[in-house]
Image (cartoon, rainbow, N blue to C red):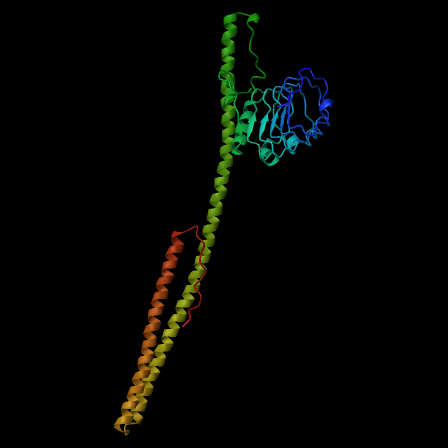
Length: 341
């Protein structure tokens, strides 16, 4: 790892270090950075600017740092921070911004779409409002970004998950100094102020949780409406299918009646032939009976086969109706196609 001299005054000496991959300027007084300070250092993958008295970072200052994996901006004087400034760092995985004077992070809700590979971030020791801190911690957790907590978590003052923060009341009520009056009274008043601040923090956190719950309830209600819409669609399709099935059943009945009529006509014709040919010899009489019996048997066989086939189809339709009723979210089958004989 290459380190800068402790008393470096200018950065110009490194502007032509185009192959430099690691730059550690920790605890170095750099002064204001220029737009072209890192313009030629396109190979950097580790940049440590911790404790370099940075007060601001402008858009375009890191335009050429595409391959940086770790960026450390901790313990500076930053008051403004916008995620979009680092949109070119597509390989950035670790970001340290703790120990500054930040009150908010611009576009924090889009952090994953802007820095897609970001996995670890440090944000403690800033001037966070407790409500806002709870919000950004929730956002980072939902986007699977690990927030590295301080080694010594805050316990005796307002905090969210061990990260110190300020309530709105704290900015208005200041602790009373012992020099201003009786030391015992001052201590008691300070305890009361701490209790008030703690209660205020709880109410603010509860309000944030309530907003999150409202959003979740809204999403659930939307899902319920979608399910109801699906049920109505299934019922509509089922009614249509039942209507089509009824039409098919009526067609079967008509076909059965048709075969019955054919059978009756054959029987009537056989009777007429038997009456007209009383004078036929025995052989012709037997032949006529055989033909008539064959015709009647064929018609009766066709009638029984059609009746059995109709019974099977009706059972299939009843089974499909039961399956459609028990499975609400399944895909409704199309009406049964026309039967072929």
